[in-house]
Length: 308
View 1 (tube, rainbow, N blue to C red):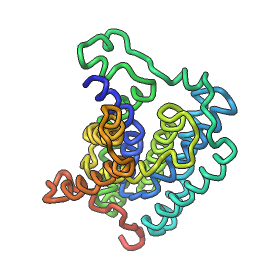
View 2 (spheres, one colour; view 1 turned 45 degrees about the vertical axis):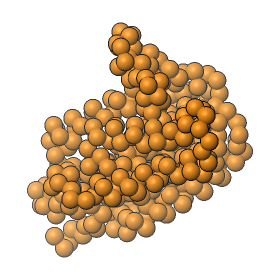
View 3 (cartoon, rainbow, N blue to C red; view 1 turned 30 degrees about the horizontal axis):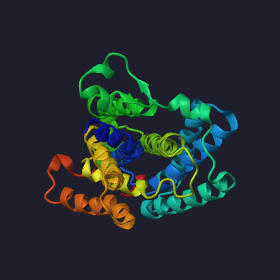
């Protein structure tokens, strides 16, 4: 059981980064459906940087920068030019898919350099790793899993315990009122959209550098769309996003576990499980939602200052 739960956390980590990034983006009033594309951009740039430099740090930073660059495109088109957010997000996904396919073609099937993989691989936290049950499940992982823990706590504190976080939520809830109170609406949107993209890029890098350290053209495989749904499941709450990511990470590996136990299950059915679960959970999560669990009021609503 401990091994399976630990595997769920590992499988859910790329979803966690992408979900946290989309939460912070949506809380500032922007709906970015380009998560899949930004994850692919981060995955391919992280992989290519690792191959070129043999540096895990540079690979991770490159992936973060790639995701942030994709988000910057989204921010310019939506926050400054007031383009339709749904259309721009979908276009960003198409762009990211082509971007990753083009740059990744020469390295298709090649592995991450051993030095990079070893640098990111398992790092057991002293003392905590020896706690019964908790240690093996939570504290015997690779470095980026622990980064995920830190981001969850940091985001929760930022969103609910700081003035800047309150301002960010105000922008998402009532953009006109936030602007009237002196908050730089455009700046808040830009910053949080870019942070969201950076985290999506980091989620992609986790897949290409740690989870599946061999370049594949379909390495993200729909996880960006699952992350968008997980935002709803988590009620835009960073803490809840962890449990959602672990749940869906577990669903993603459940088929392999059943097959390893000797159950004869079609691979097509196995591949369907996370997506069917996504549809079911989104339907359940949106039914009779409590007021505090509602999406930001001005989510995806274009803001024209002249009409305030």
